[in-house]
Length: 117
Image (cartoon, rainbow, N blue to C red):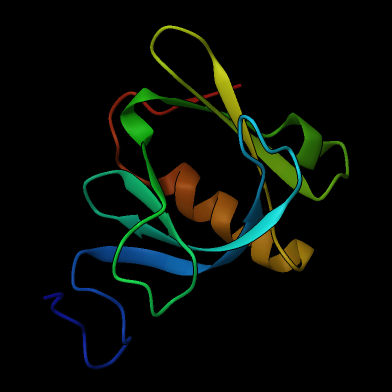
C-alpha cells in the first residue's frame, strides 16, 4: 500500500516522477520506463505508472551523474553506478525541457555522496 498525495497524485515520499527512456547494462537499446525519485535518494523505475513493483532501483548516494553529453547538445545524460565494476545507464527524455527538469531536480537533490562529472 502506497500513500498518495491528493494534490500531486504522487507517493508521499516521492519528489519527482515521469517517463524517461533508459539503456541497460546488457541491453543497450532504449526502453521507456516510469521513473520515481524519492526523498531518501532512491531512483526507481517501473514498467509503467501503474506498476507496483519496481524493475530496478539506483541509490543516488552511490551514483555518479555524467552530464557531459547533455551539455554538448545531446539528448541524454549518464548515471554511473556499481560497487565492483562501473556500470552505466543512459537516460533520455522525450523533450529537452523534460530532460532539463530531471537534471535540475537531480542536481538539487540532497543525497549525500551523489557526485557529478
